[in-house]
Length: 62
Image (cartoon, rainbow, N blue to C red; front, side, top):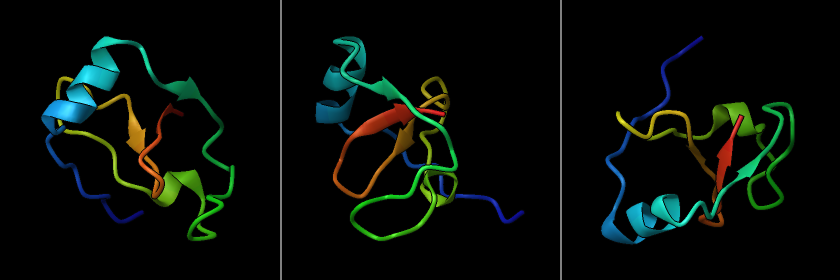
């Protein structure tokens, strides 16, 4: 499987992470914006590598 990009969270995304503004989801879910699986979306660099970034800006833990 190819590696997904691992961006560093922006200050706005860090605020969402600190506030717990993310959801759990299955990696097999389909993104409503692009039609790809959640598994195919980028996830953050450490220490927030447990969160995936969806096209609409939502954060999910797979």
